[in-house]
Length: 176
Image 1 (cartoon, rainbow, N blue to C red):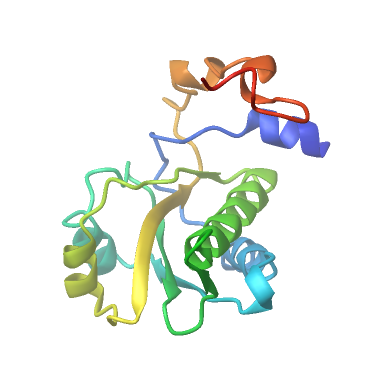
Image 2 (spheres, rainbow, N blue to C red):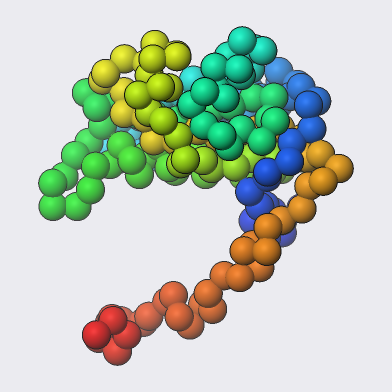
């Protein structure tokens, strides 16, 4: 599968099969997050893997969007490690997002689906999983094989046209 085919085929999964993810495939997914580029190569991203029955039950207290996934990654970054430029952005957010994207695409290549979930309760995640205060929680990512009901949401096909998103040389003609 070419990269273009890979990114076109990926969509946010909302119907996971209960089938466990093989440990070697999960390792490849996590490795993709490890090698992701980060600001100043500080690598502040921190990933919690939740896959035990007890952990998944606790995860259900933190988000209603697990969708039956057998694995959920909690994506965070270390505030004490991340680069920060007040005139631009907290790079930990970007670094963690890049790592998440790498993991989603690696998972897709392996036939494992994912979903970026921001509908979470960070204080409850912190409480349930003993997440220290120096870690800023960004999102969770359910992972697993698609179920028989799996299909892209209608929004998957409703991307804005490239001409609406991209400008050349100046934004003067678009944003009033």
